[in-house]
Amino acid sequence: MHPLLATALGEAQPLVESRGWAWPAPTALAEAERLLRLTSRHRPPTIQIDADGSIRLEWEAAETGWLTLTVDGSGQLRHSAVIGEDEFERSEEFRDVLPEWATTVLERLVQVGH
Image 1 (spheres, rainbow, N blue to C red):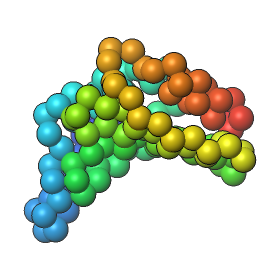
Image 2: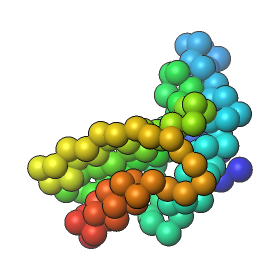
Image 3: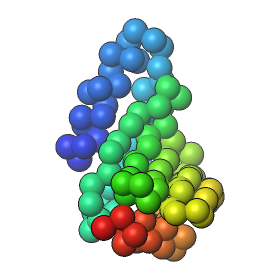
């Protein structure tokens, strides 16, 4: 398991136990691992586990904006982003490659933020 994902799961464990959060489904974990592989040429994201068991990978670029890619085991990849004055939101089937729109937004965020 990717170390960042393992850390996020460790941080979520107490919330699962004390607040009844959902533990990510095996399919969500597999999707998160795949997403981490597909984005590995970029700087590492921050990973958060949500109360519903979905997994968010987040990148920030100082005051420039942010990008969140979310998987939940449903086979869909959701994203939301703000880069400068542009806002993006989209969802589509998540296959073995990063969708072109996700690649474009991530590269744009990284370029503008550095």
